[in-house]
Length: 456
Image 1 (tube, rainbow, N blue to C red):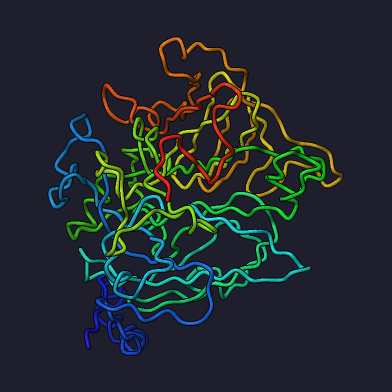
Image 2 (cartoon, one colour):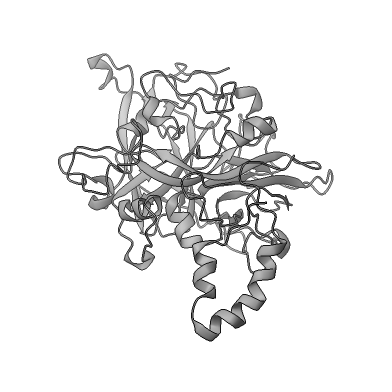
């Protein structure tokens, strides 16, 4: 039986007399753990979704001012450049396929959504999490959790904050139970060694759809951001926009068995849906539409690995597009979540948006007063989320004169250091809103649908 003490636990035990005292209390915990780094215990019980935590590699542009001894990482195999931790959706896989996902994490983590808890038809949502371990760093036997940031009324046992709930050791699994009573946009992340694990990529977006959905008398699509009662948050299309950051030295240190002082964090790359511009404009990886009931599911091969688009193999573990597409006159919901460490200033040049929710809270006063507001720029701090709706302007044909067939508007972080990460290039938090003539695009079938997606 392979039992390991992580470097972090070792440091906790170090130091003269402290070693004796701490060792007496901590060593029994290690002896009680059965660490099975090459085996995932079979899934047990009832669950709606199954995630796995592990490590992996992904791609960031090279050849610019940020090329240093730390980037691209010398341990990375082309076309990848950067070491990460992350989550994967392993729902529907066999045990052998799940084991194969070790060192195949994605960034950012899968887009996830739930329906609001309905007291008339009560059903808990259950998410099972397993820990595959770190292939590159078997010495780091960190447990993992899934902490739903901002979630109200959480039972502490399922909160994911490890000192008051349960964390998942390597080779084990745990099922979280939720009753999502408050619609809106949230985010989730691992809360063990949370600064490191968040920075390394164990982050994702999650949102709750309201009970009002399906009511076509308030808005024709029957889709809403909140239970507004008047259709004011109705929309035709929705797009998730997840903001994150990469500190190259921190990622290199974890790959090369070096400690990081995380208070020295410096964001070298700012990402939108796990990519930098212009990769943000590219399609999603091939979508498994039938399986996309609670999470945007990417097609997998016989071994369970993510399938990617031909010619874009570098984006295999960055499957989410950030391109926003719509027909003129449609209402579009943008769900923003910021799990970077810096404030973002997201601007939609040429189109005003109405902010209808912040931090999964509708913009209404206690007396029902409408506090939503119109703007073209949203200032969002670390850990904040925004729900914003815009009505697509009339198609002008301006871009169409060059054969594109749509009008393009830029959505970007107007903080220069987060929009332009490398000298001579705009490789940061930037994407486009593309407005087509009426009737060009069919009804949206899934979150963040891209016109060039491959769907099965």
